[in-house]
Amino acid sequence: MLRSCVSRLRTLAVQRGLPGGAPLPAKDPWSPRVNPGAGRRERAAKPGCVRGDPRSFSSEVMHMDLSLPNPSWSEDMRLLFDQFMKKSEDGSWKHLPSYKSKFTQETEDIKIYFPDAKLMKEKLSQAQLFPRSLEEGLGFEYAMFHNCVEDRTVCIFQGGPYLQGVPGFLHGGAIATMIDATLGTCAVVAIGVAMTASLNISFKRPIPLGSVVVINSQVDKVEGRKLFLSCNIRSVDEKTVYSEATSLFVKLDPKTRLT
Ligand SMILES: CCCCCCCCCCCCCC(=O)SCCNC(=O)CCNC(=O)[C@H](O)C(C)(C)COP(=O)(O)OP(=O)(O)OC[C@H]1O[C@@H](n2cnc3c(N)ncnc32)[C@H](O)[C@@H]1OP(=O)(O)O
Image 1 (cartoon, protein in one colour):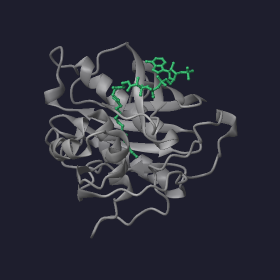
Image 2 (image 1 turned 45 degrees about the horizontal axis):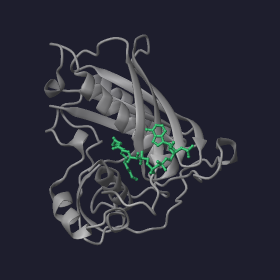
Image 3 (image 1 turned 30 degrees about the vertical axis):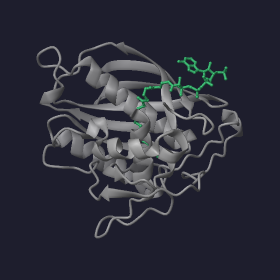
Image 4 (image 1 turned 60 degrees about the horizontal axis):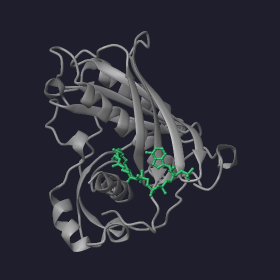
């Protein structure tokens, strides 16, 4: 199912030309830029994400970018968003849009990875990206920005009241979800469709419910299909480190089908 999330977002990214919405950027910010067979130093250090996979995808898309500000966002969240949008003006950072979508039977990734594409089609039509599945302001409010030169993804995140664990603080599973989503995004933009193979989190300080935090992730090393990434979660003033994590993502092998 998480494969479907990756695939779905990829589909969305390719299809995100919005009627009446924001114009398409010159280059697709979701396109992988790393040759999985190459070491880190050998990768192209181009100032922008380069489309590496020409496969096309087809789906019905709900044309609403859920990573744009909404009334539930606090002032801190809006200020940070504006700061990163400003940084994106020279192309060094790219805002990564996020949509909900429905697959059709034509979606290429389904055909590649799932043995029974027909069966999957019905299941996938009901599915939603997990962190985008709660109503506005109640769960995961976030926006991500990627720096293609530095292989870094930053997520600004505000956790709503449905993510409570210990009273007044975020649930560890919700924190892990956003860490995984940020690292996963960083991995997918860098290398293409990949899944979490391992994730190690150190929870250092509890995150107050409703507060805004910044998740900084980066690619540390690439070995063939393996991508090693790390991240930390800090307060907006950067004084508090809430969590740190390391992870391994593995780029999916198109010869191996998911069962
Ligand atoms: C554009 C699109 C946008 C998308 C938006 C993104 C949003 C994303 C947000 C959502 C993000 C959410 C993301 C999620 O939550 S993904 C959901 C959680 N993850 C999973 O369910 C993954 C389950 N596992 C698998 O499917 C397979 O095991 C994978 C695919 C990971 C590897 O199986 P595969 O058959 O392909 O690989 P291989 O066996 O040939 O091994 C290859 C190499 O890897 C090494 N290895 C493998 N496993 C491990 C391990 N556990 N520790 C250490 N090393 C490991 C292995 O030793 C070998 O190394 P080497 O011998 O070559 O040196």
